[in-house]
Image (cartoon, rainbow, N blue to C red; front, side):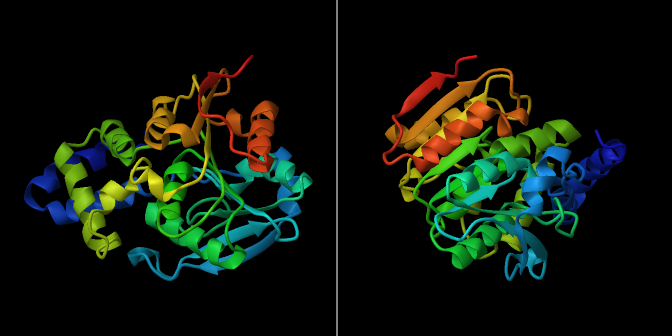
Length: 300
């Protein structure tokens, strides 16, 4: 826990009783700050050095306007595959997937969200992720596939229900519920439920003022028919950040279009580099027909 957490908790719990607006604003600023800035690992450097590095500037999203985002692209531009990193992470964490897809003739596209990786800033949020994904869709065209990790699954599906198009979707260690995140925030910081309500009100008023019902649309199982693409979900039974039940939310929502593979011993992060997982994702992306539905446990 952050050393300032007890002070923040005390202040928020006291302030929300008399001034919910300022309390919601402060809670939001705490909620959207990554838990540190991840650095690239040695094994990620070669593939990242081979990427074409670009920039985009966010044009909407309340406080997001004007933020700069670092982007990455590989390949010749044909059959683009969007890679979406999770919270407190960076694009390089999906480097093994980028390398494998590039070897099969696909063109991976990725980004570091504000406050993550090499992008400037100190914070980001799901609305900013959506804006970034929309801009990359405008640049690269419809995606052959989208591959996302953790919070990136939630954010990518939010964008995919708002005009971004893909033929396939793969999610690893998915966060499927925004309520799961706010509940974790409340438990981790020890704040009153009124603080979470004030945070929600701040988002509705300042971050997405023109989007009624936006909190329902944050949920990854909202309007599943809008995606219209097959889903492959991989989730480790030992995931200490998001339990497999988060992926099962998506399986229930998407029905026969979704397939869940439960792995063992990989946790929340190693799943991104595991050779068998990478091979499964690449097979799904490159397969001529949709994968069968249901759930299975991976061998090993």
